[in-house]
Length: 205
View 1 (cartoon, rainbow, N blue to C red):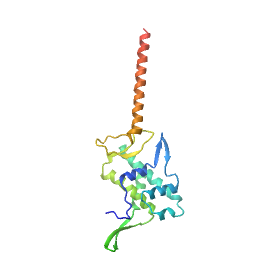
View 2 (tube, helix red, strand yellow; view 1 turned 135 degrees about the vertical axis):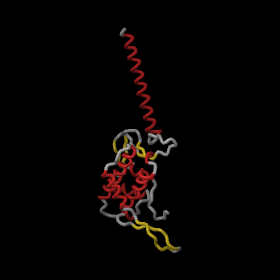
View 3 (tube, rainbow, N blue to C red; view 1 turned 180 degrees about the vertical axis):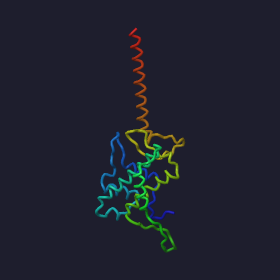
């Protein structure tokens, strides 16, 4: 049961968080470049309140956010590549999960209701809520549907909800079409080279 104060997120939002370190032409592009940008992203997705954004001394927060994001990326990559994840990534995700909120019963005007309280830092709670849907998908969902774009210059992670479960690209209109165009150019080049070789053999006779 979700309350108006609930910070639960879905898998798509969790993967969007992982993709805040994206790649353009193979070069990393950092969406969470500053602490303000990182906390703003969390606030924009309903994961922290305004009060959390105003707290001083947030320098270490950016490192925590990026560290959790990197660990989740490693879990997704390892799942997609069918290999064991790095033990440090597992430890980092477990650290985030242990810091989540506590649900409790509280009296309300119409009787008891569910509310939550933060055991520690609201930022840690936000990271726990982002980690949980990815962990649940890997452990008890359809982990084979977690993918990374087949383009080596993109590597956007996504959940493959296609009927066949064979989606390879983050977006067929961008990475998919570029891959098709590259294959076409390679075939055309190979065909041209074959024709040139045939002409060379004929003229050598």
